[in-house]
Length: 256
Image 1 (cartoon, rainbow, N blue to C red):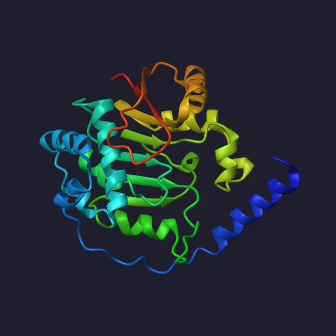
Image 2 (tube, rainbow, N blue to C red):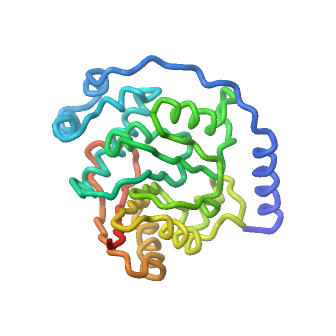
Image 3 (cartoon, one colour):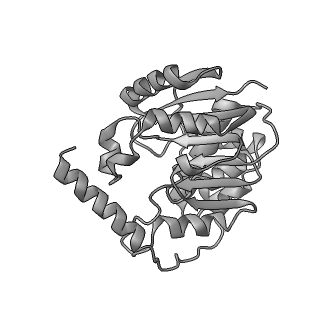
């Protein structure tokens, strides 16, 4: 990134942190699972029915919109596909790069219990002037034990039995496109730190966007995964995906 552009991005980021006030997001009534299912096509509804037999999907009713419920449904479908009935140790779970916590209903449906949702840029604003952090905190308040944490993940400590990391920035272009300073782009160091947060017997689920980013992710894992067991799941099912771009998944397990 040119020096002048980098300085502008840094200034914008700092201004967002300084101007952190947000209006309170409007509250929404609980959704109905039947309404969510009715919005799906026949193929999608079939997969929904499979998940409903395997999991308690009530947390999806706490999504704040039908689109948010679709994203949360994709999250639980992805975790069910990648982890299945894997037995994880007791302990809290962590979502890295939580944005506005849209995925939380799906994460909680897959693994009820305490969730820490960490976001480094929580003060980015929407057209109604609310911030993603305000939405994230409001979502976290709907789930017992959930916390929305405005912090660089590299400043987080502790041990987590399940860590999810959807679309980490492993190449510079999307990092810059989202207005994050160059100093925060450290994919190897950040990955090594997140791995260090994983408890014995725990699982780290990483989902990348597109084949190119998945290839970079594989190289990063080769360099820093150490003694963790790595399972490359390749291209993920698109049956319930509300996204245009293909997703690729990988699971890391720390031996007990």
